[in-house]
Image (cartoon, rainbow over all chains, first blue to last red):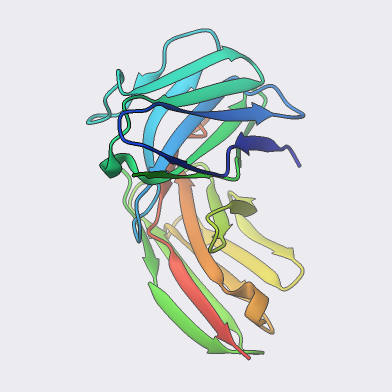
Length: 115
Length: 110
């Protein structure tokens, strides 16, 4: 099946710094990428939807200036957590889809810890 | 807004037992995913189904669109099946935006 490669799998950063998470679709063109966040013992929550070449659509309550999403190509989408705070510590995961298939393919996830 | 409910939230089983995890949703959907999340967090897609039944190895997934209900069954459970199982519903035709259940944590004891 199709593969979405997400990096890094784990990252620890200091408060105030920025962290970039990458998702690459390896064998398909991801016209749409979804970014999710999961807090401990909670379900995955959609943060934003990005379409290649256009601005991301953010869910209510998600700060677009803090969580910068770039989807500059059909195979790469990035999420940058800017000026990270300890409360941003979470599990972030992307999923991508194409115009030709309604199935979404998941990245491996990134465990972010802000200290 | 679609509400996706899973039961049970936690499940402990002896190795070899037959396991059933249930998922119900409030709004009609085009398809539903069953996902497996291991302790490290990575998610694997087990099934995507829109009708009937699918089988892969010891895993069986069924869906009843009219009753808005899906089940995931594991036959001859094994400790390596221990994980969190999540159902996620597609919101509508042509959309792969998902609404997730809270997950069922399965522990299979040798």
